Amino acid sequence: MLLIVQLNILFHLSDSSIAHALVPLSPQESSSSSSKERHQQPPLVQSTCNSTSFYDICIATLAADPSSSTADVPGLCAIAVSTAAASASGTASFLANASDGAAVPEAERALLRTCAGKYASARDALQAARVSLAEQDYDYAFVHVSAAAEYPSVCRTLFRRRQQQQRPGSGKTMYPPELAKREEALKRLCSITLDIISLLQVQE
Image (cartoon, rainbow, N blue to C red; front, side, top):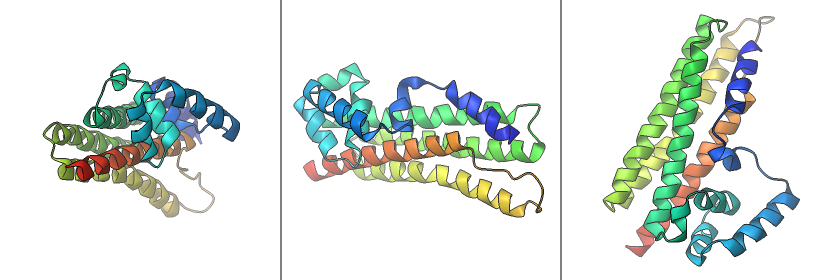
């Protein structure tokens, strides 16, 4: 329980630049926000996001970067992959900091360090994807982003395994809700990036 409280505090202090991918809007807010942003965004941004699985998050992600207003599809893809990399990097840093907490038991510290390493690997894969995109090597970019989307799942599995290994009656090591939100946010950002890469592959 202490671990969850500490992580919740850390994550609530996180960079708000990816908050749109962390907390879904209500149906009413989503509809209103989507309609407003749709009219404000360039046609290419709208048509690109229409091809993704998460239109509203795609619009919010691209709109957060001023260069999206003049970017072509490869440029929009670069914005998406950079946002995903920032998400993974931020989570890796927070988990690494949390693992240094004096009040965190050693077993949980090791678990957090491992999770930090997985998100760091996701960041590295996304940075490699950015290089592949710049070289117009869309197949490799797709592979790198796909790998990045899977790394956080390992962290969830480790928490579940740790919970199963604990004796009945002892304090359970629960998967922190804020970390679950971060995992979902990264997966959505990677999904958007993969959808845009697919557009680029078709255009080749």
